[in-house]
Length: 190
Image 1 (cartoon, one colour):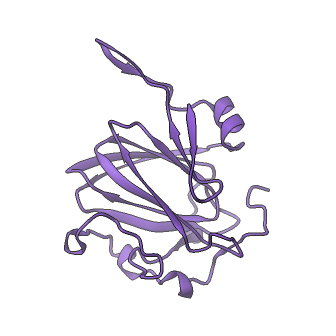
Image 2: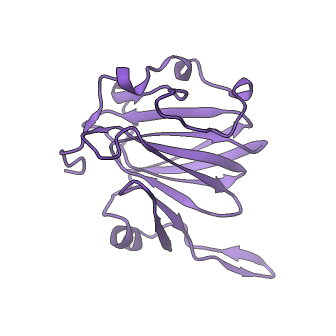
C-alpha cells in the first residue's frame, strides 16, 4: 500500500496495490502489520457500513474522550467526498480540513485520527461506504459540529438545496460554539 500524506499531519490517504487481469482485480484492503508500520499502530475493533443516495451528507461527527475514535474509511460502490476537520485545540491546523474523493474505482482509503470530526457527502446516485473504528460506538459520547459552518469553508461539492441531512445533523453548533474539543497536547492514543 502507498501512504499519501496530506496537509494535516496524521491524516493520510491510502492507495492499495491493485492487481488487474482479464478476470477482474484483486487488492489487499487491510493489513494490520503494514498499517502499523506505515501509518500508526491502531487496533480496529468495529467495522461499519452504510448505504446512502445522492445528496446525503453525514457529519461532522466525533466521539468525545475517552471514547474517541480513529476511522479508516473507504467506498465499495459509488463516490463520496470525505472530510476530516482538526478539532484539537492548540493544534497548528485547528479548524482546517482535508477533503478527498473516495470512489469504487480509485479504491482509496482515508485515515482520520482521533481528535478530528468526520463527515462525507454522496456524489454518486448511490454509495456503499465502509469504515473501521478503533473504539466501540458510545452514544453518550457523541459530538458533532455543523456541516455548513462558514468558518470551516468546506466545499461539499453538492448544491445546498440537494443536501439531505438527518434531523440530528441539521442542528449541530459551529466549531466556535462546540464545548467538547480535544487538547492537542494530550496523547489521544494512551
